[in-house]
Length: 388
Image (cartoon, rainbow, N blue to C red; front, side, top):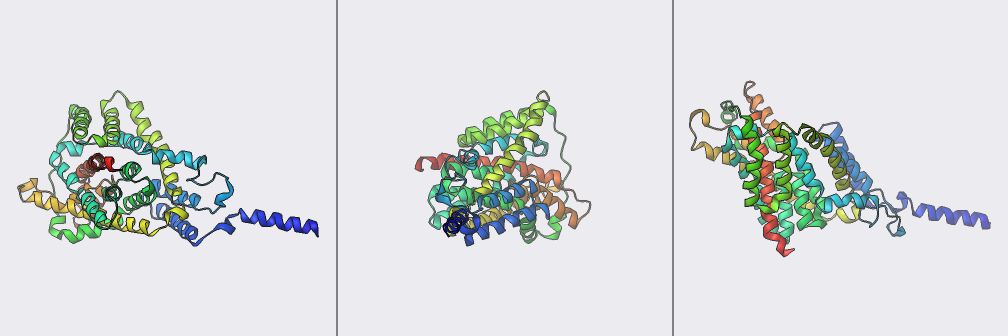
């Protein structure tokens, strides 16, 4: 009998440490969400390089365990492997490295051939500032409101960078919201574009972009760095790495560094970022009414940003003549979701007119949106860092 009692006690102790004994409804909900992310990434091919690591990270972060056992398993437990990897998020290390890779793989020729399209990337940032005001009205502290508003830029690394500085406790919710809307660009943007443009506007053709010289391509990252960071020094970690990566690409003499930045490095950082951001959605700390409200505000921010770019393109057309007029749809690409937003514009253009190719035109506001969101983040950081 004594042996049976010891076996029963051992089994009870063992069961206490299993996930079955510690699972909650919250864990189950987050596991389902993780599976949905993986499904969307694999079956629907919605940003699989983001959604698959994030979805799997959500599963990893929501395996229930006995939190008081001192096993150092959870992402928020000091000394755990996940906690060390998460430093790259909380300390803002991963986002600049991703911007380095983005710069090394981005061709700014479309923007250089028609610089006025940069205004569309700037106009799309209206979603950030209007949502910032809305979040303030809902009672969020200013620094939290800024981190939530940046979701409208549809730029995950920028959202993580700003929230790591202003609202580290909201990183999980903000990052998941930002990457979710980046992945769902093909679902969210078309209805907004169709609502704000007529069939005639969607059929508008634009004149082909001019060719851009090598000298222009080399000078752009240097001039761009000086101009944007003098305006917004707070965005230096992101903008500096973006333009550095682009200079590596365009210089022609640092091909190995450009290839490493745009391939191996960005892939490694994306893996670590996606996994740890997903794991940060631990149900015990993530699943709150505040997180749900952040998702709602993020959707509003993204919708306003898309609409802002389209409406500003229409406004610009009031002052443009002939073949200089813009197809208003390209304004929707002013958000930072590169190149998905530009692809959405291309798809809708071909749908209304199979000969209307808008991809290169849409890439101009799309890449300027990357710059614009980083500048906006730097401005908000400079204004609000002193209150944190």
